[in-house]
Image (cartoon, rainbow, N blue to C red; front, side):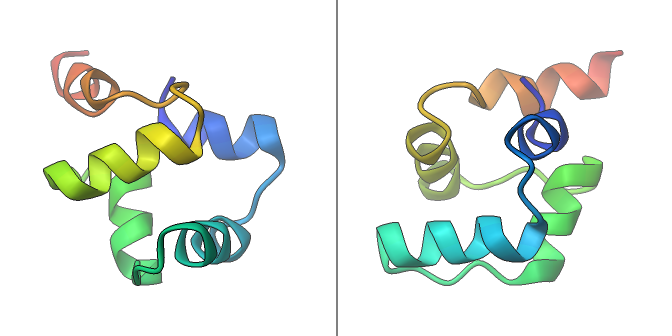
Length: 71
């Protein structure tokens, strides 16, 4: 599932999603970075991919970022 679709499904704003990540993983995700992940202009690094996979309970997977480039 694309990150944009996950946020919509869970009714999370970017701000709330960032807070959820930062409180769960003690890491900082800049809002601009998250926005680029959502729009597909930037692909998360391995560490960030693992965080996204865990925080979304596997709904957002690394392939979701790459498959968007092919479509």
